[in-house]
Length: 66
Image 1 (cartoon, rainbow, N blue to C red):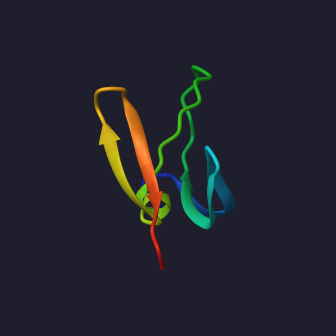
Image 2 (spheres, one colour):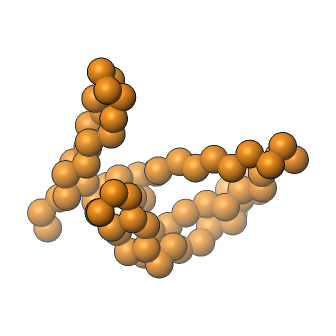
């Protein structure tokens, strides 16, 4: 557990046609505003070579060759 969060493993995470299986994630309690937010962490991003295009703004993912 990390600061009141619990760790889970997501079976699959898909973002615009790319997918990663068995991604570790933290589930944290949200505030009472009903706002949902998410964050892609390194347990997902480590599967890619990635960069941020600040002009568009856009996250560019290229699958790593294993």
